[in-house]
Length: 490
Image 1: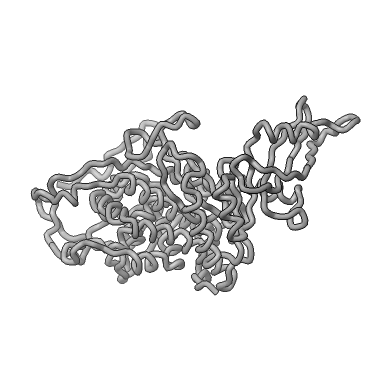
Image 2: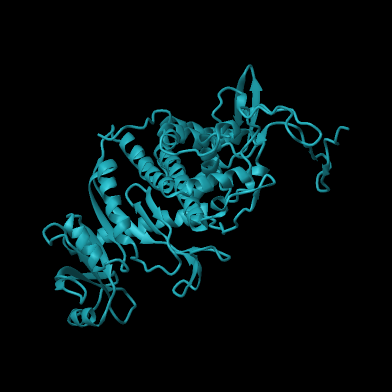
């Protein structure tokens, strides 16, 4: 029985008909862009060389490389829920974007019987996207300690590949790493999440490292919701510095917020001669030191803000020695009292005076903007809870299989979101270069990635047909993407 091709009619225009036809239409054409970016990076091959697939080969329908692409493309396109993979199972653009097969093979669909089971049982011919249970098993596979370390390395590898490709294979001379904590609100009783009195909600409190100059995320580590801002900072930061100076730049500096200047972190950075700048929380001693300088000069204040700098040496109680601190005093028109705060650094005055130090510290705003895009555009959904399985395919499973490390699963989800951010950000930067305009991540997704297209199969070729406006943007992007080649570190 053939369904009515015009199931929808509208009242406002009798000449308008809405038809449903069995054509290959998609609103996810940008998945092809994300796949091409991943290919230019070679990042999936990089993962394939380092990740171990524990599944039995005879039972594998979707290789690990396809599962990685599926997860990253769906996240990049804005599909946060793994159930979306089932809804988008037959989307032509997504199937072309994630498949290992060439030609029109990704669009081939096996015939199905009355019970909706494929008539062909050949696992080498996958039918559409991987299902939600398969993607959930991928999260489980990646949750081991070794695999999570590989995912972290992939973040830095992608950033290094993109930067070196634009510099003929050479690293940057100097780079500043921004390290900050980031609250991620969760709903439920996910293991490790806690109510945080500062943020007034139940959260995880991960550490995130990024680069303001390039916009890339370098590392992510999930922590419990009640973790102090600086908790685990040494173990997170020192290996990252070594890897950054091997892959991304020759000399790395560190920029941190007021929650991080503890003795163990500062002394460790000084021990490896890493420059740093951080804000210091005001306290009674610092307020007494600042008091003589919180007075306006004689005369009518100007209409423009004014800033004064004063150099001091200061040793907090837990600190092992005095350190250079800079008092920054701000006068804003219309305010009765002066504002002030303190910066701490191991740069000397000759290397970086007060105004230069403040200008550098204010670059944190750029890094926070990139972290904000991760949370606003990708919106990581950390929802994995410990739901152990007692049976699989009708058979009891061993006690070892029943154990579910939900905290590790959530860290994998966060790392995959960070990887999807780096992939999407790479495309956004190429679009900025091509157009000479600023592009937010949201605008890039809405104008370039989430666009409609039709897929036509003709003469053993799959043709993606875009609208005229989308074609103009894609042509500009491709002019930069086509010459992009990942380069090894020099």
